Structures are given as structure tokens and as C-alpha cells.
Amino acid sequence: MFAEERIGLAGKPIWVEKLRVEDPETGEPLGRLAARASKLGVDELAQIANIQRGEMSAVGRRPLEVNDHYNVAASMSASLRGPWNNVVHTTLPGIVSSYALYHHTHPEPDPNEADIRAEMDIRDAREDSWAQNVALVKAVAQAGLERRLR
Image 1 (cartoon, rainbow, N blue to C red):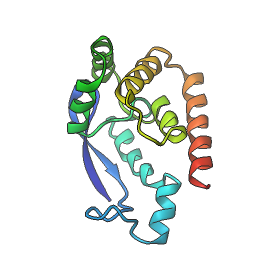
Image 2: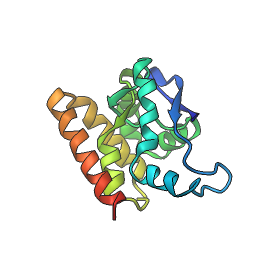
Image 3: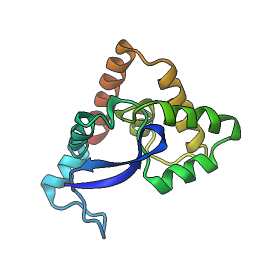
Image 4: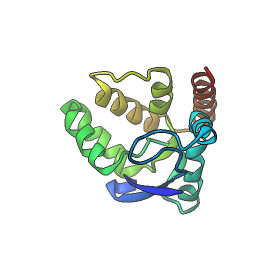
């Protein structure tokens, strides 16, 4: 286990729990079991501790590491920055999001990545409902398993 500092509710840092599956210096899996755990997303399950503490929810924007948060905000369109910051300040981050689904189905970086993330985070916050959250969890799980089991 380890924790990474990420941006939580109200833009305040939180420590997000993770299972260590990669060597922190090389990025290589810590063995076959760790590689499989990473492919299946098991390393994310440690974030249940963050949910129990009220720092995260199951569904919500993916929390960025502190430096990444500021870099993403600086690289997105000015018209999205305000609404996205509003989402960051008023919603709990989550394990599952539309952006997580997008990332599973589009693993290659996109030059408009910051805007894509912002648009999805804003839409998720506006459309937040029990039915939407269940559908999103199902879609992310299905896409993640399909991608990871290839």
C-alpha cells in the first residue's frame, strides 16, 4: 500500500490509497501477480478506504495528482476552466467517471485531453443520478475488463 497526494473536494489535497503493483523507480510490475492485479484494476480497490473516510465517492471525477491538476487546468480552454474548477470545488472525486471510461477506450494521449476531461467531468456533475452512476460503473467495468484482458 501507498498513498498519492491528489486534489479532493474544494480543491484541497487528499491522500489517495493505492496498492503498489509497480516498482516506483522503473514502472515495471512487481511480478506476474502484480501485473495481473494492475490489468484488472485491483490496485484501485484500496480507494475504498478513501470512500469510507468521506474523501471520495464511488462515482465522480478522477482526482489528479497536485502538479497534474494545475497543469491540466492551465492547458484547458479558458471557457472550460471556470466550470471545471466549480466541479472540483463542489463534488467529491471518485473511482469511476466518464473520463475513466474514455481513458479505457482511448489509451493514446489526445492533444485536447484537458478539454475532454473537463467536458466529461462537467457533464458527470450535471447529470449526477443513481441510474447514471450505475450505468457508468457498469460501462467502466466492462470497458476496463475488455481492454485489460486482451
